[in-house]
Amino acid sequence: MMREFEIERQFNIKIESIKPSKGIYYVKSNKGERCLKKINYGPQKLLFVYGAKEHLIKNGFKNVDRYFLNIDGEPYAMVNEDLYTLSEWIEGRECDFHNLDEVKVAAKTLAELHEASKGYDPPENSKLKSDLGRWTHLMNKRIKSLDKMRDMIRKKNNKSNFDLLYIKSMEFYKELGRKALETLEQSKYEELCVLAEKEKSFCHHDYTYHNIVIDEDNNYHIIDFDYCKREIRTFDISNFMIKVLKRVEWNPEFADAILESYNEVSPLLDSEYKVLYAFLQFPQRYWRLANRYYYNEVNWGQNAFGSKIEAIIGEQDNMLKFLKNFKKQYNID
Image (cartoon, rainbow, N blue to C red):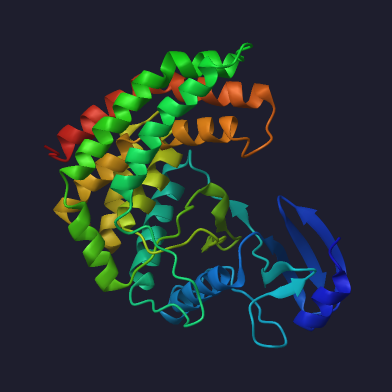
């Protein structure tokens, strides 16, 4: 049980009302509306995230959910060994990924975030979060894990609908994963990692519709930096593109608009398109869903898992057509 008086004492506020909302708490206090969130990682990682947001603000990217400090100048409260953060409550609606104009602004905003992220030196007592140079290893490991999960199914006596769909579709995604790894290995991935290291930039790492909040004045705010880390920017771009494309039947018009809008603010290098293509190829969503299912990472019902894998499999033709056109359009050899 969260002790509200501890939150009040450590953040020096008076809570008038508190209500849960999608994994966070909406707090009305004597100092205004706040977002209270329980954090599932340690204070050193949190200091990296706090420092990243402060760095963005200092560099002119101010529309983030800034943390409030406690009475000791730390960006959290410790309650029964649990960490809580208190940040600005940003009133608005989620970005609509079916709306091309909103997607364009979201792409520009991502480019502005990446530009503002450059030169970030994390606080001394923070833990550096980085995926630089890790993607060849991660892709390899995830491709192998597809086989491991299939072996787990083969040992089961009663196979679920998900198991049967997985067995039927797994080879397709494994082959796609192998191609993505090949693309990445033939790209200038390592050089781009060295460049990102030199630039001291970082990525949001969860740039999706519910983390892009549009207020009544049409300002775009980026929230929830929990996963931010040192990373090459094409990861963020590809992740954002896939989140949009899966909602619009892999319509290439949306992909082109995202890249055009991003390039207006921060032009991509020629060598980045091949890495971007590798990320677009890799069956990350398929692997992640299966991983969640077989390692009990989330407790969705059987039906939810079944409909999610069906939806991913149902996109195969549109996705392959998109990848073929993308490769040709951006001259990826």
